[in-house]
Amino acid sequence: MRNDNLKSYLHLHFIVFIWGFTAVLGALISIGATELVWYRMLIASAVLFLYIKFKGISLKANRKTQLGLTVAGIIIALHWLTFFGAVKISNVSITLAMMSTGAFFTSILEPIFYKRKVIWYEIIFGLLVICGLYLIFEVETRYTEGIIVALISALLSAVFTLINGKYAQKHNPIVISFYELFTGALFITLFLAFTARFDAEFFQLKQLDWLYLVILATVCTAYAFFASVKVMKHLTPYTIMLTTNMEPVYGIILAFLILGDAEQMNTGFYLGAILILCTVILNGILKNARKRKTDRSLRVVKTIE
Image 1 (cartoon, rainbow, N blue to C red):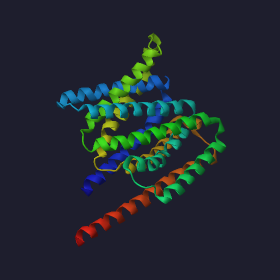
Image 2 (image 1 turned 45 degrees about the vertical axis):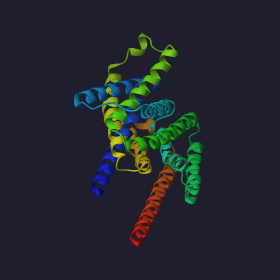
Image 3 (image 1 turned 90 degrees about the vertical axis):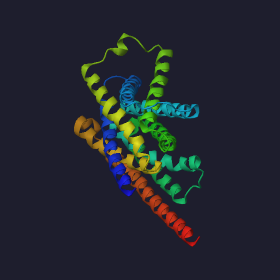
Image 4 (image 1 turned 30 degrees about the vertical axis):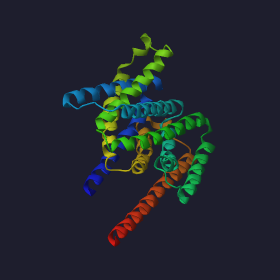
């Protein structure tokens, strides 16, 4: 069991590295965020469907599960729309720094989802995260709109992680991934259809855009999405959200190496980002220590009984 947990944890770090590269691809692709996400989800769901058919995996699920996965699919679609929207409005560094707040949002939402009391230090950490955000807002006022959109994206990511954590324990990860990606693509398709966005220009993409989209849809989505759901069987939602906070670190480094000076920020930005990241990591350490203490207490009680 511990070996499975370690493998899942290391696997998750590899997935998070891929996610860090996702933001860079979003900046390199020239089309708008809505079109980008539509292509991403459609291609990824098609790849997963072919894999499911090849493996002979059943897609059967009851209506309640289908409805839940549909809701999750719409949420992940909205998350990606706001995520890539933030990249287009601001840049990769700003967007990924804001994604660090995902663990903060998770700690707020967990008591609601899992019906537990709020822990006192979560309030203190919440205030520290706000201080980190203030530092970033203070020095990067030109990116205010992008910061707000990225924060919405982080909130949606937290909600999605909590919902998906429940389904990952009971259902095949690839089936979950297919349903969520397909329903997300369907949701965006309806939006594009109602807003009359499908025209000849919509399907006329540059060769490099097609290349980046294929990488984004196959490696960064179909594989990473399925794999991330799979590791949820061995890791808690908070551990997953905590680990994904390495995404800004990987992504900002990759962005600076690939995109150059466009990603260079003021000192205050890095101080704010580090404060947020350190707060989230410390929160995770305390949560882990608290969980171990609780587990030991339960073992003692069982021994006495």
